Length: 269
Image (cartoon, helix red, strand yellow):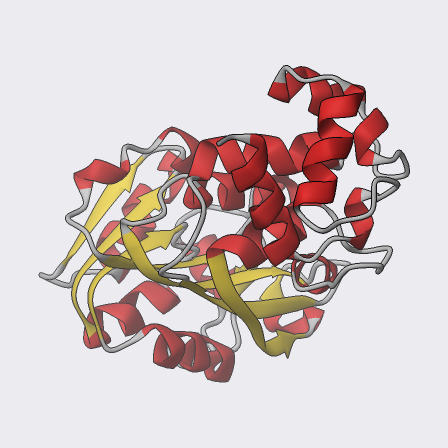
């Protein structure tokens, strides 16, 4: 489908977008092709959300197998007819409850993430490190900027550190509101994420970084959330910071992802 008339197609099936699910369907043919080109060629693809199937069809042309996890059962009649590819299957489920072992690894992840659960989905994907080899994701532009922000920036936070510790990330291109139906009130961006080979253990490290940013203006040595998580006192934290070559008055917002990883190793050895 090139430049699909989303409104007309939905109307044909007596449907409309669901605000409660954050549905803004991509309708720009050129953008759809650019996303598919970034993801393909691929062996297996996990697509998060189908929209009206425009991107799904393009992915099926460039991958051996495409699995789409779609939460909106009302779209079933439309998508069953619009995506008749033999190398495709739908799983009608909430992606946040999806069992990733249902897809043979490794696979590529593609999706236009609903803005209201973007962080939840990203954290879920980080917990699946080792199963996927690439992700091409549409997110709010401000979220992309935040995820790629560096130390000292007001946008720099736990999600920035976690993503940059686990993945190499970049913004491929921006997508303006008029490319969607209905148009959102914000600009979007398509990101490429590629897992790093040398990365910390997932769950423990994520909790560590989140605890460090629980009170981002506090010195780490005086952070109750961090000291409680590590089961250590302030003096031990000061000593560990010194061993890591970091000032004892350090704050989380000043550390690079590499410094977080070094400190984490010392705190958990």
